[in-house]
Length: 339
Image (cartoon, rainbow, N blue to C red; front, side):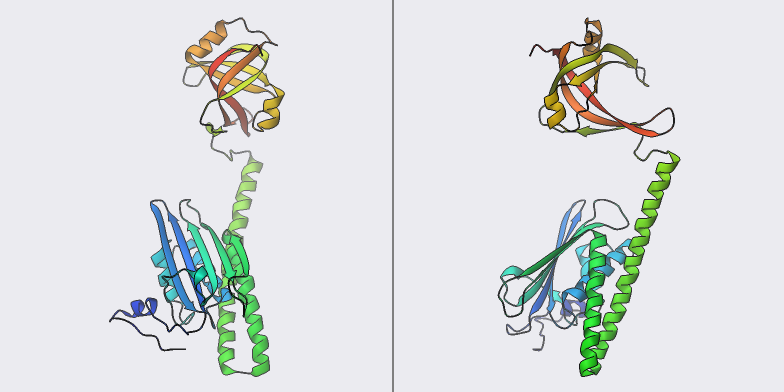
């Protein structure tokens, strides 16, 4: 490999991240990473020689271990932290530098890793995805792509990759019996053991989470937050639903002392078929003056009415202590429908 050169006197880390190589140097692996932060995004692009450790099995394993360190709080979720972590894992690879070209248009690049980490949702295992794009030997361009979505897929995929690389190197070493190959086998074995440990930790975390949810359901405690509503079908304009009254308007006193009117409406078939959140029997809430007007009208079961407003689902705890949910219609308009 041609000797690496630097353009100015720099620290040891800078020398390793700003190496320049000769145009006829070996093929490269490029890692593009994007961190989605609450205040914006951070991007990182690194290049490394493709052989021997600058290949998907080795670098996917390094990313899996980074996720494991992130879960333990040993590293930060940032572009700088990922770069420093990869630099600390020498000699995997020996040289690593900032990449400033377009990998898809660079003939030297035979493998492109595209890593995205979303830090906006607090969790032990962050939301992430990894795309691995490889080129075939002797062919121009990229030919083979695989995508892993989520920490589980990334760590499990990385474990399969590095375990396969370890077994391949063992088979080659049995044939050639090389001391250099033996060192690679030992490095791959150690790396596979580390990734396997991260995979076991991830599975244990997932099992604990599933067990906690199961215990919560069995005990009858609320899985969803109590007295919470989520808006359904967020439209730029209010939703208008027509239907037939199942029961005349009645009034209900809220916990805060307010009075609301309630209508039980059987929506027309077109709404039940094309808007899946609309149930067969829809409870409509009419507040304030709208509710008072509905209570004063002579409404009877079978009357045709039209309501305008928004759909929402309400989570609450029943009298038996079991968490429940109900679809409601918050009406801001109401009237007879003659259609």
